[in-house]
Image 1 (cartoon, rainbow, N blue to C red):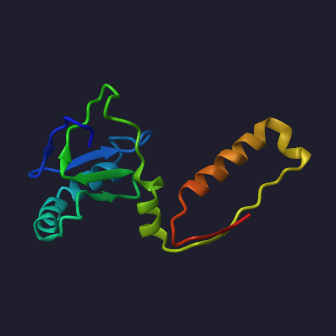
Image 2 (image 1 turned 90 degrees about the vertical axis):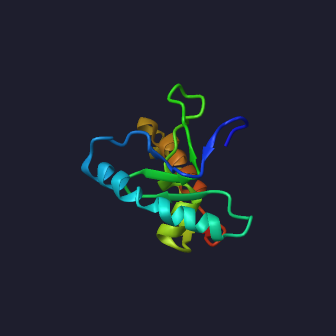
Image 3 (image 1 turned 30 degrees about the horizontal axis):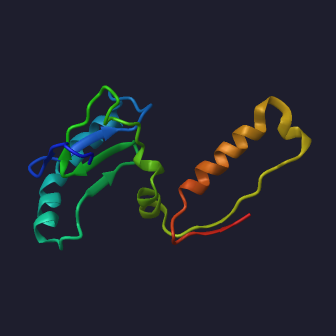
Length: 138
């Protein structure tokens, strides 16, 4: 949380990843489903060591719930784009340890239609999702 922001131990917060439809059935179901986590969050908070500060839950549809609850401003000051599905904690929980070999084609054909920037961007996305448990080679 940013300095001066209020947190609530009696509520959790929910955000939906940028580009995800708020009216999609999966999104609405996940928002409703995750409201039931509040009791678990509070039990964990009460029984945990002082090392536990935040609890997160992400869904495949892009819904993210955090505890303690925090008010997010919609003006962009605290409501930054956030997609839990691209965070290392979510990827590690959803996939487990991975062995990855990244191969980028650098032939002349990659200069057509802006292919190389797209390939580099995809490579960066893959690398940013790696965790300490993953094996990686180029």
